[in-house]
Structures are given as structure tokens and as C-alpha cells.
Image 1 (cartoon, rainbow, N blue to C red):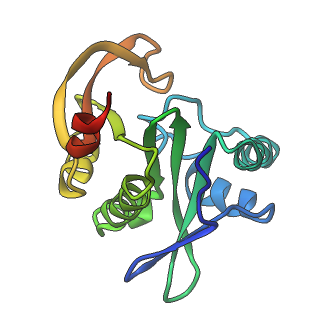
Image 2 (cartoon, helix red, strand yellow):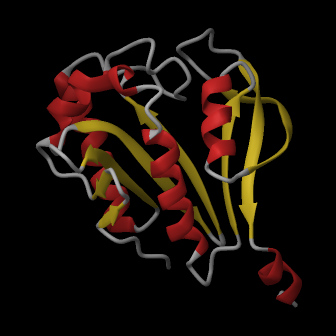
Length: 186
């Protein structure tokens, strides 16, 4: 079972375990914004109550050790600018993230992805860290590439993004795979 740290630090960011008071900040910053949630695999939160329910699910996943969501805060002022999540599945960790529109194009997503990838890659039982993004989402593809992940292939009709049209869309698959661990496996 993989256990995540409650706090990760980068030069500009704090990634920490969510707290109940984050729901309103999440809702205000991105959870109801249709442009920000366009490429999420769930609908935007329609109310603060829905944001609170989302946060409750995140905290339950922490307790189950099945997924770890970290709010992304600026170190300089503790402003909540996004969220990154690592979902654990056996020897693999799947990463996804969201950044509030007011904080796009500042490198925060790349910095957070790098940090979570480094944490996941340091886990002895993790051999693959991966993420997907829609082929028509070049900003997310750039984030994953700048974070050091390798584009593997296009997964045809891989994911449904209900905020676009609900039909499965093609996605790029990205990964970091520990080659030495793969070679050492029996």
C-alpha cells in the first residue's frame, strides 16, 4: 500500500492534504468554471454543496489510500490556485490536475506535476507514473512534456469529457516508467 506525504514543497508551491475549508475556495477558483473544467472527466460543480461533496470524496480516498489529491497553493501567500491528484493502482500512479484560469501559463501545473512524479517515482513499489490528455488540449500536453513525461501513443476514443460533447475522445498517453525496475521483474 502506497502512502503519500500530506505535504510536498516546490520552490513556489505548497501541495498539501485537503481540509474541509478548501471546498469554497475550490468552487470559487475553478470548480464551477466551464472553461477550466472543459477537459475534466466530470461536470463542473454546480453549487458549493457539490464542491463540498467532491472534497469529502477526496478525503475518503486519502483514508482508503486509493488516491491522493493535493490542493496547490502559492508559497508566497497560501492562495489556492489548483489541485493535483495521484490515483494509485497496484504498481502504477495516474496523475491529473487542474489550475484556476487566473493562474494559467505561469508554470504552476508543470511544477506540481514534476513534484508528484518525483514522489511517485521514488516509491519502490511504483514502476509507472502516467497521465492522459485530450489530443485537442495542447496546453495540457505541453505541461506533461515539460514535466519530463514521454508521449507514448494516441489512445483512440479513450475518455469521455462530458463538458465538451459526451462522446469518447482521443487522448495522448504519457508516462514515466522505471526501466531498471521493469528489467529486474521476474
